[in-house]
Structure formats: C-alpha cells, structure tokens
Length: 395
Image (cartoon, rainbow, N blue to C red):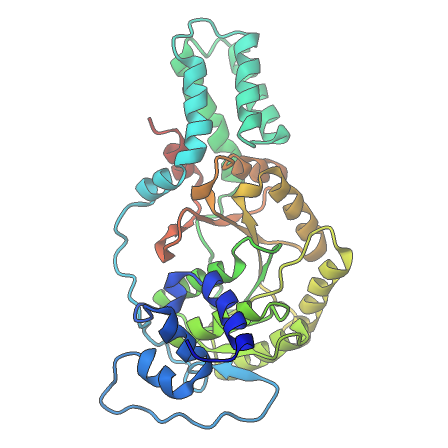
C-alpha cells in the first residue's frame, strides 16, 4: 500500500469504521480503497462504476472552503449504483431474527416463569416484574404493565397462565403504540428541502444510519444531499464523501475542525438552490452530559432558521440499544436541548437489552422511526409496535 505514514494512519481509521455497503460492491480490497483516497488516477481505474459509452470529463475543483462531492449540478433523481431490490424477508421474520437475544432474555424468561403455573398470585407478579426490569424495560413501563395486569386480576379476567401471557403482550404493545407514528419517516413534500438533523453520542452509528436512510429515500424517488457536519472526526467526513460519490448523492463538506453550523448552513443554501428534496445533516457525536457541546446543537438549529424558519423539520436522535437505560438518559437530555422529534434505535441485533424500546416509549412517548436489526441496508426497519411485540414474543 502506497502513501505516507500519516495518510496510511488516516486511511486505517476510515477503512475500519466504514461498513461494507458504504464502500460499494466493486470495492473489494483495502489496496483499491486506499488508492481512491490518495491517488486520483488509480481511483478512476479501481473504484468508479463500469465505464459508460460517453464518460463525462471531471471538471476542475474550485478553490473554495466548501467542497461538494457528487452530482450537485443536476439534482434530478439518479438511480443508485447499488440496487436494493425486493426485500428478501418480511418485516416480521427479519425483526424476529434480529431480536433473538432480547427474546431469549425477555419473552423466553417470561415463558419460563409461567410454564406449568396454575396460580396467578402476587409472588408470580413480583417475578414477572423482576424479569421485565432485568430486560431493561424500565421502571415506568414495568410499573404500567404490572399495574394493568393487577387490575385485570382484580376483575377476574385472567384464568390461567396462558391468559396472563397474552395480557402481558397486549399491555406491552399498548405502551409501544405511543411511539408508533405509522412506521418510518414521513417526508413532507411541501418542505423543500426537508431537513433532517441527526444527533447522538459517539459510537451509536449515526453516520451508518445516515447512509442507510439516504439510500431508502433515494429508492423512494427523492433527491438527497448530505451535510458532513461531524467536523471533529475526519473519518466521518470521509465516509460520507466516498459513499456519496459511489451512490450519486452530493455531499457538502469542509476541512476537519471547521464550524459545524457553517457547513450545514452552506449545505442548506446549496440544497435550496438546487431544488433537493431531502437534506440530511450529520453532527459530531457528543456526550449528553456536556452542556457546552449540547449548546452547539442549538446553534446549528438557529443557523438553519436564518434560511428556513421551519428547519430542521426532523431532529432524529440515534441511540444504541446496547447501552440500556443510559439510552433513556440520552433521550431526555437531547430532547431538552434540541427538541428531538424522532428516534432511531440501532444495534438491537447485538444486545439482550432491547427492552429499552419500552422504556423510551413509556417515559418519552417520542416517535420511534426506525430500528436497526443488522448491518445490511434493509436491516434499518421502520418501527411498527404490534409487529415488534409479535416478533419478540413469537414462540
């Protein structure tokens, strides 16, 4: 592999943090992707899509602070170089598979408690309460579930353990319906561009989620632009730039360390002038306990308001399900700081703490837009409360 030691170090961080789908199907080797980074001639040979009959010459890059990668001049919807195609499995089947660890700890645990039980008494309810708390369902949600079950017991509605099991599913689904806004993100076509501000702490999968979401919107026939507002982490900017070029999605970026609000302001101006349907703005990961960093997000919102007083139209908080109850704390802090309007919960496939979905719905009531149940693009699934509970409790 060629390049200076410094270049190799930067590339190493980028390569390790970039999912395969963001690198494109033709990019099979680290050598080829490194060439894309630091050798323009090799990039043309190793990474561009198969040649078309009349290749378009590359215009010289203007010497400005803003760098736009991708087909900005023509914002007519461009078909992706990677076709998703029909979903290979249903929502239910894929979510059920992704929730296997949570199901083992929660629904299988509840089934074990109820197996062979003839009497439904306070001791059994206490065991159920413990099982819910261990699965990170949370105090608020658990209290509501146990309270509702106790009322049903008082009305003599629960005759046996099967009836109790069904009642548990019904009450848990009722909690999740508070956060079911019809599944996925509903883009208002009257807002052009429709601006999505992505926020969250470090390491939750914001940049990867942006890639998956942009692909979904592109497949729906919308033109998309990305703003690389995470200027603190070089790899985040590089991820978006390479992925955007591979999939014909323009990316507005500046140098590492640039003012995030300035980058997003420039991107919004560009999206407005080009008639782009959706602008997705990345932001740097930040600890929800650092008030100065949270204030920066408020600044980003204020700057957007100078160009469009209704922007951002969606403030999407990305949470890592594996963090359990800490995800609920993050949701509260970010909501207080910037007014979260939707949540994407990632990495549900890698944790037994999927009960946090119930905790967020019970405590916050915010719409859960998407859940991540795997690494593929199709594994970012629109949230549906009843289907989620069915997948979680299906025996």
